Length: 202
Image 1 (cartoon, rainbow, N blue to C red):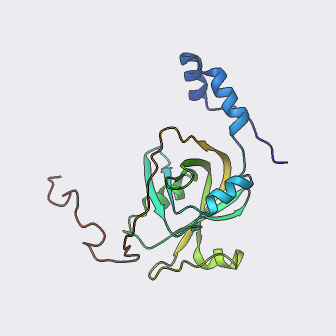
Image 2: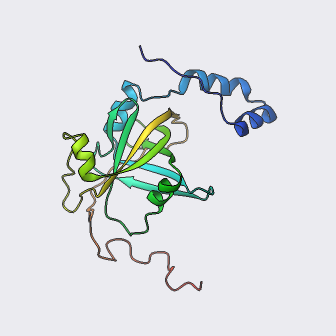
């Protein structure tokens, strides 16, 4: 039977729990909800999701939050302690990967807005693995069926914490038909200069 793992919490967490009187609630959450691995239900949940949010920071603590998406199961659950998501050709900035190269600590937030209306936090350490090396290690890893969607590399995460993001304030969304232009370099199809940044004085 897979068991929960209680963690001590960061110093900041503990100090604010004491300040605001939430120690009892926090201890209950630590003891009942936080695992140091993905249990069977978590693995099943991740394997059917189509999006995730990624938080990284560089060595000085400057943060970046990004979004990743793909077909159901684009996040590969390697085992209970490891998962990986593909990195496709993007804008060339490499913000998330650049941070990971300096600081391997990452936080993932995986939310199902459509079916379960629930979320999963996964915190851990990441490494960058080139696609050929990933496929050599895991020959049965899936191939993205969408034209123009071929991973250049992968972010491999070793899980340190996994816990629920409650459904209380999550909206339920409905999927609608939408043409996605995977892999395009067409400026308009990528959103163009939607926010008018190009013409904004620096």
